[in-house]
Amino acid sequence: MSLTQQAIAPGILVSAARRSPRDRRRDPEWLWAIAFALPYAAVFLALVLYPIGYGLWLGSEPALYVELFGSPIYLTAVANTLIYVCISVNLKMALAFVLSGFFMRRRWWIKALLVIFILPWATPSLPAFMSIHWMLNGHWGLINSALLALFDIDGPIWLIDRWLGMGANIAATIWKQLPFWTVIFLAGRMAIPQELFEAAEVDGAGRWHRFRHITFPLMANLYIVSTLLSTIWTLGEFNAVNFVSGGGPSMSTEVLATIGVRYAFTLARPPLGVAAVLSSLPLLIPVVALLIYRLRKSSVQL
Amino acid sequence: MSVTTASSRRIRSKGHYRLQNYAVEAACIALGFVIFVWSLTPIYNMWLIALNDHGAIFSGALYPEAPTFKAFRVVIHQDFWYLARFWHQFGNSFIVGLSVTFLTLLIGSLASFTIGRMRLRQGWLLTNAALMTYVIPASFLAIPMYRIMGIYNLSNHLSSVILALTTFATPYAIFIFSQYGKSIPMELDESARIDGATPLQVYFRIYLPLMAPALVAVGTYALLLAWNEYLYNFLLLSTPQSMTVAVALAQFLNSDESPWHLMMATAIIYSIPPIVLYYGFRRYMAAGLTMGGVKG
Image (cartoon, rainbow over all chains, first blue to last red; front, side):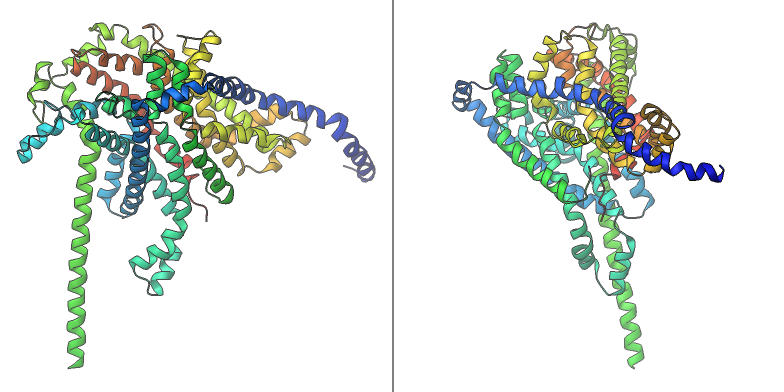
């Protein structure tokens, strides 16, 4: 490039820069951006907003809610949802947190165990829950056979009791989801710089103090965000309840996620099903709001 | 005198430490044993039933007394009326899985390219739309989605499930891509644009190749999601022609007289692809997940 060209160039560049945003660059740029965003916008409008609007319209009849609140089956399902979500989420998160500490230990057999431990998560939920359902069969299920053979105990017929059924649903949910959250917490623990622990050790901090003043504060935010997210997912969990207890005996272990489908497709009353699902919004919305607030405030990304 | 007490104390404390170490080690092994049994029992139970003959399931034995692969042979040869179209349904599951993966990657990467690279002023709208979809449990949208697929005239057509599952997989894709895209310098785009490349060329020649690890992570996620999903498959696909394996498997529960060993053999065959995929791409999946790790 010669000197003269360089001398002329700034003038051209200036005029190009002045003109380009409006007629040369910006408009095509803007059109491209629209074109790129279009597929997701279409999916969102046609397959998220439309169903939501449709659902709100279906479930807008107040008489539906009067009917729901007069139905003991529905009220049982609400209570079950609260119990199921509270116990399984909190127990699972606490266990995942403890186990992530266990899997931080450097032993070859612990590394090998992690590979096995992840298997429940890698197994599709349908076969896994079918197998758990079958294990709990009172006559020839594996659990009762094992109880009889090992401890000479005659096990109960698990799934004809409401509370044993609820317990089975909770245990199955934890079994399936525990590995995922353990791996998340394990990644969180590994992201803590090792120097912090070394420095604390030099200063004479014991195991407990290192946990209390380093691990705990650095993991707190991840723990809270994970708990909120897991609450949302567990609230919508259909497979565990549908395949382990099947909602039985006589619909006493149903939760809102399964009873909505039951109303809509077994009783062929979609509006009632939608109303049952919508009635969980007072539970869902605060959790979502808190989650979004937490995500905005912190640097935790999921 | 003082020297000996000090050394004896040291010895005692050493012994104390060793004792404590043994205790910790023993506790670890006990916990490891519990984890081992807890994780494997339901999976062992699947094999136990599948390897038994029909009658032997009801014997209550803790291990298969006369293990046989007969059940697997029946499934593979489609020798039972619930399984008459097993391989066709297996193919359906593959079509659904691969289509959901492709669409999720395409739509997700296009959207995150707009959000992260094109400085569209309304980009936050897309991010919020994705976040909103992400926090709605899929089962809560099942009823209206079922109705709407009827309105779109897609009932009993694989594309209904493909579209529904793509909807639920894309938000995660947008988050991961946006996050990962921040590590690709904008200067690359700018210099290509100065050389006259269109945004489409930048997307294909620069953005996609550099996003490869994130594409693999999200692709695996989408494939597993589609393969493992049950509720939407069940609601939207009810003819033997359109069914996927998940729906066919659940059909066994319709009767009390079902051959459970065949059901479990089907379940095991159905579980193999996701498990192989999962362990094969574990490294990439972990990379995707650690984006969920703490950052300080």
